[in-house]
Amino acid sequence: MQSRVLDFLETRVDALKHRDKDQDEMRRTGSEIFDERTLMVLYKLLSTGVFDTLEFPISTGKEANIFRGTKGDRFVAVKIYRVATATFKSFGKYIIGDPRFRSIGRDHRGLIGLWAQKEYKNLLRLGEAGVRVPEPITCREHVLVMEYIGQPDAAAPMLRDAGLDRAGLERVRHEVLAFFDRSHNRAGLVHGDLSEYNILVDRGRTVFIDLAQAVVLEHPMAAELLVRDLHNMAAWFGRKGLPFDWKVVHNQVLSRSRRLVSDRSKARRRTRRAGRRCEEEE
Image 1 (cartoon, rainbow, N blue to C red):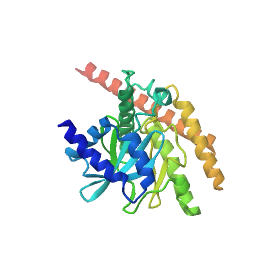
Image 2: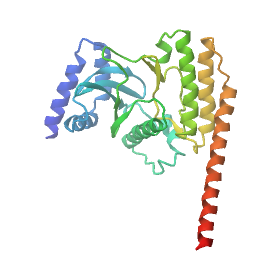
Image 3: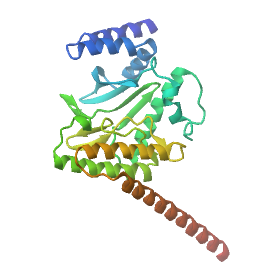
Image 4: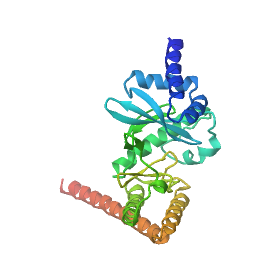
C-alpha cells in the first residue's frame, strides 16, 4: 500500500516539476520539500477530500512553501513547512512561554508540526476577533490548508508590491491600525513579524498572513514584539509619506487594553455582589 501511495504522489510531484509555469523553481522546490513523509501527508489530505489537486507554488520561503490547490470549483492554499531546513533555534522562542503549548518535545518533525498547529490556532483566533486572515481549513502534521487569497490568474500581492495610490495607502493604514487593536485587545495576540511582506492586498483590502510566530499576551516577548511590529509599520508608512506615530498607536492599544481589563474586573465584582445578595435573600 505504501509503495503505491508513494508512486502515485511522486508521479503527481514529477508532473508538477515539469509544468511550464515556474519550471526551474518547481524542480528546486520539489526536491527540497517532497520527502516521503510529506508525500504521505499530502496523500491523506487528498484521499480524505480536503483538496482535489495540488497545482504550483505561489510563495516560497525559508520556513515554508505555499502551493495553490483546488477543491471543487474553488482554490485553496496548501502551506508545507520545510522540515529539512527548520531549526528549533529559529522558532522555539515563540513557542516556549505560550501556555497553549506546555509540553514541547525535542523531536524535530514533531516541533515543525507544532509550529504549523500554532499558525492554525492563531488564524482561528484572529478570524474570530474580526481580523481578515486566510480562513484555516485543516492542519495535518507540517501541512496547513487554508483559504486562497487572490484571483484565478494570480495570488494577491504583498503590500510592498501592491502599487497603491494615496487613497489606497490611507485605507491600508486605517486597517493596520484596526489590526493592532483587534489582534491585541480581542484576540490577545501579537503578530511578532508584521511588515509590508506579511500583509496581502486583495481587491484593495488587507489580509494579514504568516502568523505562526504570533504570541499570546502572556508570552514573555509579547511587549517587545508589539513594539517591533509598530516600528516596522511606522517605517514603511513613513517611506510612503504617511504619518504613523508608533508611540501614539502603542499608547492607544495599551490604554484600551487596560480599560478592557478594568471593565472585566468590574463585571466580575458585580457578578460576585449579585451572587451574595441572592444568598442573603435565601
